[in-house]
Image (cartoon, rainbow, N blue to C red; front, side):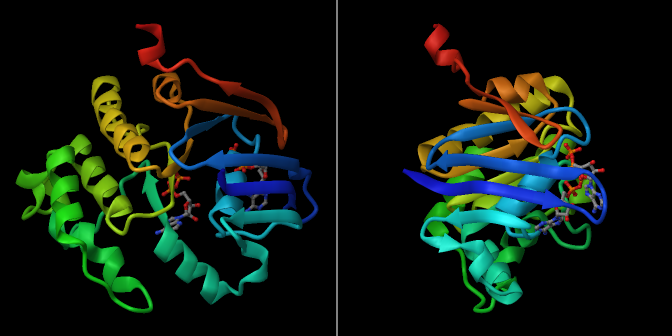
Length: 231
Ligand code: ADP
Ligand code: ADP
């Protein structure tokens, strides 16, 4: 069953060429999709449309039963808040807060501030191995630690979908592989749908599927062979 779906989506900015032309794709719970393609091929536009940060000109984005185009700006912000998580290349942690405060910050920002499920929070902290980073400022942490904090932040509210934009782009190869390995196993294990823009072939090889965009269309939609299938 698709949790997230793009149906015949078009997007053009101003008088420019189409950034996306008739893009349709389904994303399932527990699946990891890498979105690849050259610069300008429409990757960021697709991520922005799927996450409701931007509106399609035509076509529809659905999250479960909800068509994002039917919601106003506030309702979409709340939907992002409740059901989506975001991980970025630059981590986007606040330097004035500790690791733990960063992890919990999104829960305070919703319409109804919430508290974390303590068992889930402890589970994420253990699995991501960030106990030592909780009372420190992000400025005292390595890139890999910062991204593991950012992953905990993105997953703490148990989103249905998590979007990642070049999550390994600021990390060296070994650290990127390690961090993404933890992230991907968490996402798979808990049936979260992950959509990741990446240029990193190692990161893409850890996904189940690779969508290759070119000039605003899907050029390839490839099922990848998971490493365990090769064993
Ligand atoms: P990618 O993420 O693959 O580099 P983008 O989605 O950023 O591609 O861009 C797709 C196309 O849309 C490009 O031609 C780009 O120049 C154009 N584009 C993206 N964002 C904007 C914008 N805010 N205003 C005008 N054109 C844009
Ligand atoms: P870059 O394109 O340099 O990798 P980022 O990864 O920081 O930039 O952000 C990617 C996109 O996600 C940005 O264009 C921005 O509009 C959007 N974004 C930034 N912060 C948030 C946020 N807190 N929630 C949702 N979307 C965000």
